[in-house]
Image 1: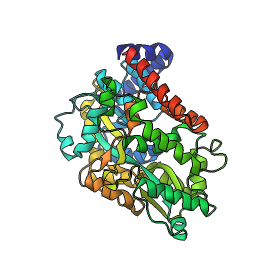
Image 2 (image 1 turned 45 degrees about the horizontal axis):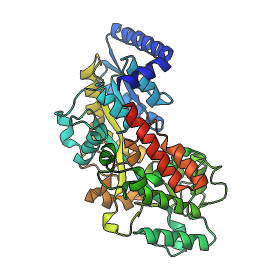
Image 3 (image 1 turned 135 degrees about the horizontal axis):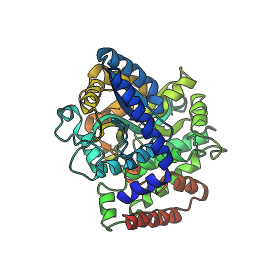
Image 4 (image 1 turned 90 degrees about the vertical axis):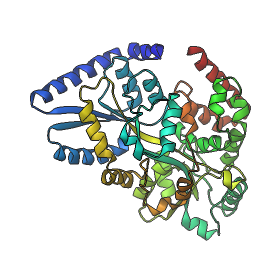
Length: 413
């Protein structure tokens, strides 16, 4: 970890120094005016407006505290750069992923294992935070969860007499029927490499086994062994796309799907607000990816999309905690859920949007599994490798490359 931080520091030293100076200037100015200024740093540009409203409400209730809503482009890189200089924001809002794990292991966050706030958080999401960090202690409060889901056009399904598929065979049969009717089953957006991830995450999570990454770290398995089924099924889905699927990006896909140009969209629930923005009248439904032929084994890929961690070096931990407690209040958490189409990590809070009805059973049963790519370090560019796979469809080459890249990561540790 020290090596990783040193590399980040050397590559972005100038940026860090400028940022640090700016933060100190702001802090001194605010404190001299009798107010405490805390920085809330997060990686969700789509939620900036939501947080602006919540911050305004918080500041009215707490006039002695100013909250800075910091959401820079490429937030993960900026955060690592600042960590290298020990110039951390007061509050960090990221996902339960490798960026969080690296910073937690480096001792950047306060230990909240015994925090009373965790009593109101669903245990499965607390466990995901522990699993991704590999630590027994808890260093963040899970707040919101998202999910991979197949989004479908209800009107097209009704027109073709299709029901929601529960098994892999039914899923492929539905795609075949849609294709035979002269319509596009799936709208792919491979111009943006990351859009390969939702489908692949769902396929891998439901076929890799529960201890895959633990076994991988111990040399007991490999991607070639554990990810073959997922990769073959991913390639099979490519047969049901459209022309120019390599020339279309995420924004194109949202609009095209909103216009009815495909029956299904292999994305996540985060795409729904954008689709509805393009066509407010569209009738949408969602269902978990049916990866195997045993519906009882189907798990919805859902991970901690947003967690809150307090920096160990924060000069205002009490005020930071006060803001987090404010965000955790039911009315404020519900406001976030409604605007962001997110599921809450807080016990007892359910998503009210009828579009998401098809996922509620999975949440109620606890049939959930984390995003596999949360356990793959950024140095392995899974999205780019999958993008290449969509071109050459060479399963063996992809799996061998993944294993080779994983070995490089192990050697650097």
